Length: 140
Image (cartoon, rainbow, N blue to C red):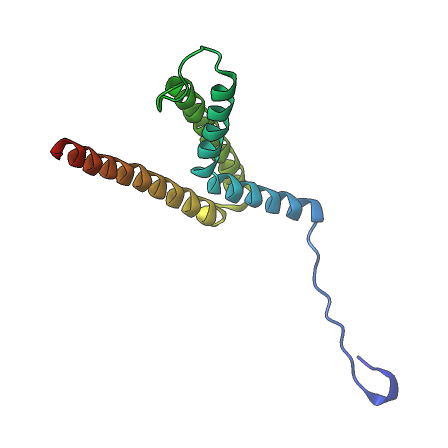
């Protein structure tokens, strides 16, 4: 606690956790948050990419100008990717729960629930808009 010239200095030492253990926890938290944040945008981006691939290659030789061209394939791959993403989120959250307890899941689960609610809201509102447009066309 002594210093030069009569001044007093103090050194504060903080305990350092095992870096591999801390890094593992932070890595799990990172992946849980990242995967939870991708519930809506990842299937949309994958669907748009697959649509570009199918439309450019046109393996079934169909009219790709039609809005429902390759719909079955796009839905299959989109929902398959979503299922894999939800499985990955479940595994990462289970590992995070095992290592850090339930409080570590608050942020990833909040993000995931928000993504699901917003995604379902988007689907519902798109259906409402399409219904309004269809009623408008039928009325003319």
